[in-house]
Length: 290
Image (tube, rainbow, N blue to C red; front, side, top):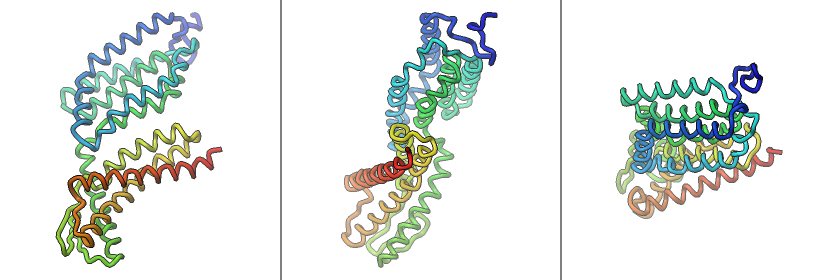
């Protein structure tokens, strides 16, 4: 058997195929992708447009495509060899999607769509190319909404943590305040730390920013992971600050910043603070990235 047709590690060589044949296979997989997963794509777009928690999803696919475009030369190397394992992953992802469609499991359907793309890359270009394009391919996971059960399980503890620590800060500054769970009582009135103020929305956005910022500005995978992980404490800390500011404004100025335009402006201002903290941490990590 010609070694150009089969490698010793079980990879199917694409080197024996013409560029036209490879493009033909790629077009076939693209058509299959659109035909199979168009309902999933439509559902994701509806989820992104219907919730501020997932509006960043609109940016994920274009950003991933841009990064892959920057790496386009790895897909055209004549020696790259596709792997039959990729075809197995494609078939498995289609089976998972069929099950998810019948069972109505939207998260599994979206995950199977991403797995289909992974399998296509492995089958057509091989594991080496897949590893080199791992970041943009993994980034696609950030566009999938968190399942409602997991979202609720994460949100409730975060609401309590943010409420407790914000009230602790208020008490430390001499503001008379009382907390019942996530409900905060002041002399002037009462307000509730709702799901939007739990920090989960900020965590998702900042984790995405941390992943992208680390990829483009750091070279060490360890430092990238550290920058990525800092998105969680930054988001929680900033949301504690948000609730504390609400308490201070309500107590001293009798201004309710928990709704309306003022709440939106406060949220944007604190997001800028979050991003600034990210940049400071990234700058500190870059000193070690040499």
